[in-house]
Length: 231
Image (cartoon, rainbow, N blue to C red; front, side):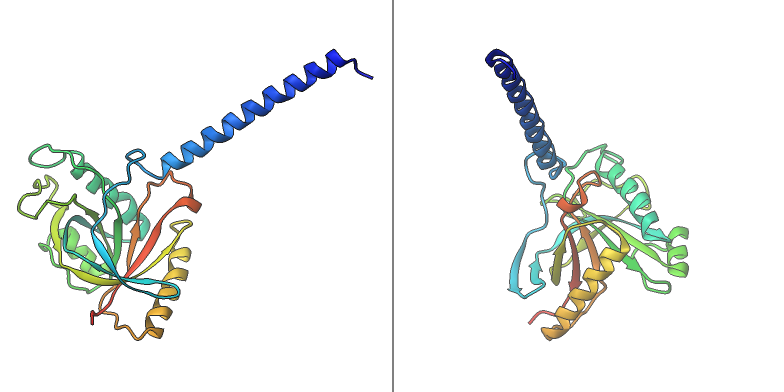
């Protein structure tokens, strides 16, 4: 049987280990919290909207107009995610005629462009390729206050500025991976809810992502926007 001094030493050691473990747990929790905000603890800017109606699996939002920088990327969504993000991030990081940096906002949106679909930007060789084989439109929302005229002009001609008109969208929000399987599952759920509510779909679905890639998937805010008719 251990003497009291020995037991006390073991108790002290155990308490020290417990304190260190608690400290590591708190540090891990803090890092996870900070990872939700790429710019720090301050939430990053997103376009203004009002909630028009709420339903069991989705809500309808009315967005005010805003300005985006966008690129069209031929091929798969993986290619669009990689190449589109790189080009747009370079633009807001100073690859423009003013060498001006702009704050990163949310969300980053991706929309499929089907082969043969009309595109509303100058018909360069890459755009013609997209019209032929299909691809994706990737957009960064510019900070509030910018217009197409006042935003810095991109150096890379593949980056275009566009004004997004006020719109109404049905939105489903979910967490998890950015896989096509996860996206399609929630898109089907949204489409079913929209049909049940008697809403008229007037545009292609938009994948909207609000977090950086290093954020754990179970903490991510992902949304699918489905443009619907107002009224």
